[in-house]
Length: 442
Image (cartoon, rainbow, N blue to C red):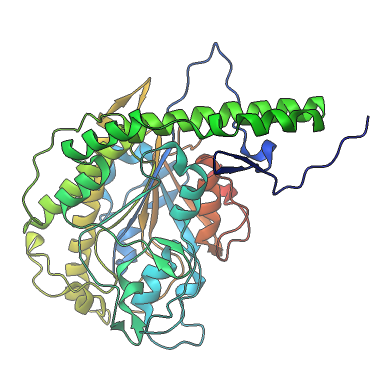
């Protein structure tokens, strides 16, 4: 019996609502055997630091599993088996490519996009979608928040901040689309309430839950009319699709509508004046977001691009950006190396907290991927190849860590992002200037 072919844009309608049918095989999640416990989800955080690093103090010695951490990365010694130190990765579109100065703005905007930012200080900004947002589009429906964007410097999204580049480029690493940056939250209390809400918001959500019906109930009649036009295989696919869709909808309802147990965390009324306290607190909030599965995708700017912050915590009272133009002065480079190590200590704090947080038969760090890096390597030369990049965590058992790996020169950083997208269940085909997966980490 010949059946009519359904258009790919077929929509089920009922009671004023519509539900588009995607490609069923692509949307249906892989089924898990009943006798296998459900694995914890994989989380991803991308952490950015400004102004590059003193690379001679950053690079480990040795190679593969037989390596020793450098002076800058010594704070990670207890976490050595949980990290991949990567060498040779490049963000080509952080380079001028005919656009002249503005390396710091390009550093931040190209970091997670691998796209060339349009040089403008006006409203016509454009760069590319970032890896976190590309992944959030694929997996973000399973959590209360598709993603969370955090930072330390407030920054701004208007005006010129770097040689004719909009401040939006310097202040954001997360881009929902080529023209829309995802503004970060720098106030710990605001970040916490954005993730977990307030008791008053939880009560409002509960009232909405009681009045809500499943969209699938509204389209049930249309679905029944559709059945006779389908083959047995297509009926099975459609049934699997609706089963998975209802499951996701129910999970979303539980996550977004039921009263939430808000974690206890002592929060200051404003932004902490102490940098260490501020960074650690934002990391604590991010850990809670992962632990409670409020989101699985996050970014955090430890400083805005071109930051000229001082670091009296390590007796560096000159501005970081100013120091980065060190002209190979040993004294200046030693000060920058102190900053680099201090920031590595904060990174180690976050990783340690993740590892100390049990989850199932493992811990949060094992079930995460945490990228730490910059799209500038040597701040004095403003070069964008051989970047300082670390990937921490086992990605749910999919990464073999405890290695120092060297990619071929000019390997796009975005190749790493494609490999990370696979482990997040997003499996992107392309992002920015990617040329394929970074098989080096497999």
